[in-house]
Length: 421
Image (cartoon, rainbow, N blue to C red):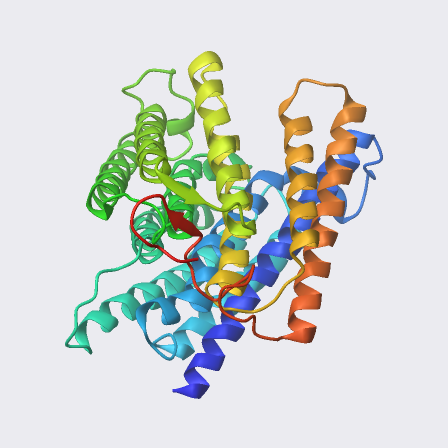
């Protein structure tokens, strides 16, 4: 069992490494393009061309679902590690190899790389779901799942049902022998990724205040489950009826699959944010580092709602950026409050401030110079994160209970009753 636990931790760290490398490559290509320094040849034009799928397939999903599930899920379920370690490791290897092939082959035909990614991700989500279901079978005491576990389970279920559809489209592309650009097909997969970001992100946000806040988990679970089920059915039906690329080319009506899924995601986001704010209204939550990132996630998603209502576009990009905030929220919550290990809080807060400033510049309609500043601030923010985690793992010391980064996941004290931090 100890070997199993160590294997799961290593696989989780590997997924986070894949997400970090893909994010740095995609972000670097974007900054070079905005600065007008993009080379005409080499790997950078390829990275700029596949920037969107690179961020969706190799950053958002590996970090929010695969990485956190391996690092945190066993502890949340009271287990020593993930089940099916061989299948789990194979999933990481296939996802990593597919990322290399996507960069090397580039556009217009990275279909083999995407098909390999589909196989690897299916291995990963089957491991996650098997671990969750096995935890209910091997224990007599059926403890309720935490918001984090529900978010990971529903996000994995969405991927288990939608990734085979993408794999079928890629297989047909390969068998046809056509060398057309498949990026429009990958754009059609943005709706399931949006749904995964919503489920996993709100699962982490609710986890940050699960004990200090006063909210019932049943409405949260019901909203998340209903949104996942309805969105998967609508999206899959639209793909079978019109094709994957056609689903993103339909008019902006509520009856189109893309807009129906966006409407369901927006409604669920509003309801979940309302429940979270209602639960924390009468609770005194200290603004620890994970809570800062959770509030940043809510702020970014709220900006996407406004943009979607005013311009008819914006929720996609907001949720993708919100995935970054959710990822950092989960990392600091996993390492600090839930794991009980020390990290330099001042440096972590500085990282959040720099990220917030970069986000504000990226959303504002400013000049290209401001966009370059945004990329620069984002890079410095990531360096702060690397320094924070490096110092934390080098010292690797536990924090006494009741201190700033206590092992207790409680983030504040309730105004009524006693909920200790």
